Length: 391
Image (cartoon, rainbow, N blue to C red; front, side):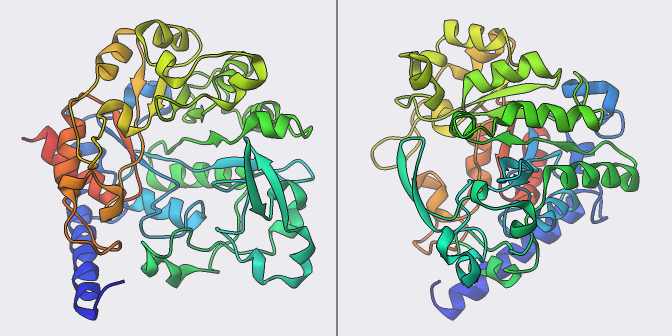
């Protein structure tokens, strides 16, 4: 944090954004911002029968909930995302426990997102493992039973950027996927509109090699809850294309392939002998192949508009056009309000906790024709969409 004045200014700015978002959503906390989307009416904000086409565009997706304001992947973060008007909540980066349950954590290593380090009874569980080829030290969900994980509490992952979120450290436990689906049903009943979620299958090759295959577990849970159909309000995503191909055979849900930097190679490609990189996947031919088993892609924003060496935006690529021609939706990631996460020309000052001109950045990205965006701050995304569709 900077000086006390900077801290007060940043806090006031957040309150202003939050209040404006509530008013922009109709003046009632919890009312969906979907009414502000282009066209206004979407069958009550995304009905079960409408499928993906019932969602407004650009779709505002609460990234790990409202993780700009609460520790990520907690029911508190998910709840706030809905209250702020998110069209979809990314409720669940799914990883397994030792006894085969699915829980919601950004990564299987939980030292940075829970208070596990303060539990002396688990000190001996700290290990170094190779996670998709990267040596990673910490505590891993697959070394804990669900009952053991339930003794932990969630903490803020990036306290240097979000010291205000540390206020909520210890308030929420790690949710299971079953609990998220029950929460989704409860919120759908209470709000009188269908609540959508967007879980990600994390490191499926890594877990399959440990006998904890994710795809079959996720499909089984969805089937038990009757949410494994084409029009089910659950979109599934993964960075591993073979995982999405597997899910295409197991469930009818909308599926999305996540795409990292152009020069990266999906981890599963190494195990299958596929030499392609992300650059190959975003060609017209690569996108047509993805469209044979998925309904969308989730590219990093840099694949939509690259940055130069100074971190400033350059010329948009043809990815949006090419993906749409292949029949794919684009939901890029991730918009965040804080300076370090914005293109250089939209930063204000150097305080890592201060907000930059995020509305300016939204305008540029929305103008490319993307179908939606993941954001840590759904209220900001909602206001940015209002500005864009009403311009």
